[in-house]
Image 1 (cartoon, helix red, strand yellow):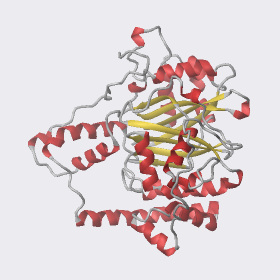
Image 2 (cartoon, one colour; image 1 turned 90 degrees about the horizontal axis):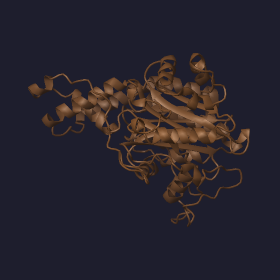
Image 3 (cartoon, helix red, strand yellow; image 1 turned 60 degrees about the horizontal axis):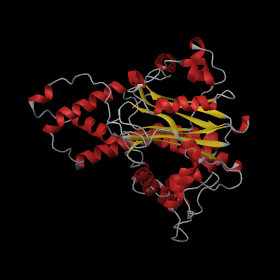
Image 4 (cartoon, one colour; image 1 turned 90 degrees about the vertical axis):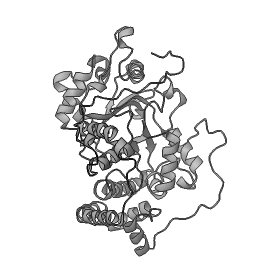
Length: 432
């Protein structure tokens, strides 16, 4: 997984919104440039040419502060190396930079592109990487090794007692650094806010032994729903927002790439935070960041093994909360897994936002309605490993550590280029 991530939110010049939307949709629907030679030359970003970029997305966010109809460009990337090198590569991959980046305020061409990105960078309050420090090249080699070694290892054995003992030891070994970070959270947010945030996040995570112990010591638990009926509206196809809330209009989805085109999907979510809940939300995100960076075992965030990267960032002085996630499988399965495995975490985060269901994430249908209404469609989504899930990669890592059982295993894997998925044509277009 990548070593760094970037979130850029840049205002778009007045009158350039529609042009940029069409350009981004064109890029997103031809992410690997297969149709460029058959059409008039169009601006493009050659993402597959990168050897350091894991994931990228571009989307248009509302810019309510600038006036009706105004937009901001959201760029989210996960990459290897330095920001300087990443900015240089990103510019070089763009065939017509002025047609894309030139639509944004503050853009000054190649020489000032790195500064343009830095000046509009938003720092995340929480950032989880499933396999931190794993370069794209290493991941591709692991995937290739898995393909070569899999015939000789029918299945990867489950953890033995020795393996479980090592896992317990690994958990304990993470505690000292986690304790140091925890002291920092207490200093920034106060002991009361930190304890309350930890209790909220942990309430349904008893399957993890040290959280089970924390919940017992703090008499922590989760309240059952008051009723078993969903509060989702009967007509869940149209979003009705409460006063002050901001939902995504149907027209925002026109022309954007479809979901489920490769093994991964992305979720981009923007919600409006209650003004009196910002401090509590900051403490909650700090606790989640602690889990993601210090306590999560490789490839799993409190039992969820489908998230490649996920981050939360507060925008506009805490008025809005951004979620940007890259995950395996379908949207429905992803949300179902969230609701089952990290229910209390969802409540802790989004109960601070307008429009959150009355019964919280326990009301799964209302949860999905809330998420869809606040989901921002990605005009561009790129994955450098479109045919590999996180489970595939973790399995490949396990296989690479298995004892040699066949001479064929000694064969050095060949360098791997980016996999080319079979792309399903979008509605109204022919397969190319």
